[in-house]
Length: 286
Image (cartoon, rainbow, N blue to C red; front, side, top):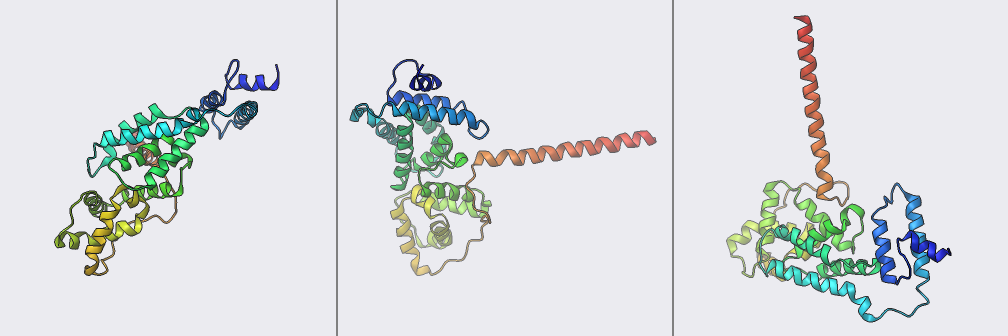
């Protein structure tokens, strides 16, 4: 058996294969390997993939239709966002996340290159500005593609937006509540009256200053600029006292929760053990 045949066998392919099937096989086998602990298997798989692909490069290029899978998948997701949101302007788009994740799973391209083009296209779509459903797409794509956990962001601004959203939802309610209210209002089409501007002026500026990347994706940029223009005569707003991190990280919500739960569990066990020890000692002396 020659080297190419060995490579195809390592990828789980029997007989002839084209680039798309090789990429799909590589993606399938890659999911079975822990790349951090099983380095030898990963290197072996990668070598087999590169050898199998090298055997394809002398062949004619695939038709344009075969290269269009990433764009087709993106078009499907754009349509899904529009259908799921229905153009509704609501405060919390996270209610659509589960549906969008299901759509991402259904339309994700099988090929490695096509899949990455698909993810990059989603990132580019988010950079084009807010539409109903885009916050849900930011959350759902980050969860589904594990961008935060693996650091495989499609672009830096999406990473910054996710970090800013994480930090916004870590604020106490006295800060988070008004910021969420301002986000909701900036998705509407009405202009604020003077009393609303006075109430929310500092939160508007705080959002625009400290959550600029996030705001560009989850609120109407034209409304944001209009509100700031209307609020300009009010002068410099008071500073919003908020808790910002000293260390720059881009965590995920799922990664942070278990640590706190484990800490509480350990404390409970220690308390129970202490009570048991004291009770046992008292019985011994009685």
